[in-house]
Amino acid sequence: MDSRNEKEMAHGNIWEDLRKRARQLENEIDLKLVSFSKLGTNYSHHRDDINNSDTSPLLSASNSEHMFDTMAMEIEQLLAKLTEINDKMSEYTNSISMSSPSSALLHTLQRHRDILQDYNQEFQKTKANITACREREELLGSVRRDIDAYKSSSGGLNRRSELYLKENEHIRNADRVADETIDVALATKENLREQRNTMKKISTGMNNLANRYPLMNSLIQRINIRKRRDSLVIGGVIAVCLILLLLYAFR
Image (cartoon, rainbow, N blue to C red; front, side, top):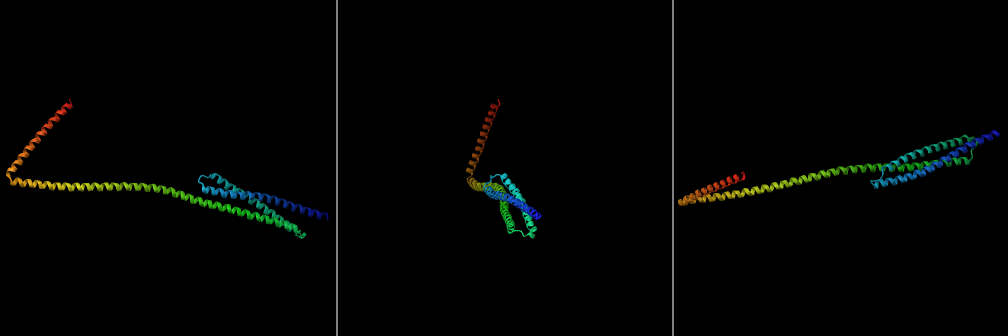
């Protein structure tokens, strides 16, 4: 009788120890999940601030990601320990099945299982939300980098396009100036041709008059001779003046 009581007391101590460890782990997991949920909310808000601002510190984002990974690992370890305790509690109830365990014992075991299941679901949900937020941010960051790279390359293309347009404008201006110069040259050529024809007509008229009137031809020759003589005299005077000026300048 005494050995049976001692055995029952030993089993009772084992059960109470398992329940105590289970409650302790549940309290720790509950606190961790609250902090983990807050971290997920803050992480999401912080990522939204980064998306809306180009000056947000990247170090804070890195710290948040490191904290998320660390806390997720700690919760997974605590859940694994709680699962192990629940398994031991289940083994305990199975080991005393011959003694017909009370319904209160089975109810307690089921409650701990339900709590473990709720913690697992809450943890997986929060982790999935934060992971989806991180993946979305990575995608948006990649798109943003592609847009910045495109803007940078577009800026270079725009500058090159502006240079090409300016060069094209210079070429067009040069073509316009060349066309104007050619038009002036053609007009000058036409005027010279008209003057040549006019002089030819005048020369022909003078020759006709000279042939028709010999005296007039003789008069014209005299005028030409006198004109050449006057030109020679003027040229001599100019030469003498230049020589005198040079002598005066180099004295």
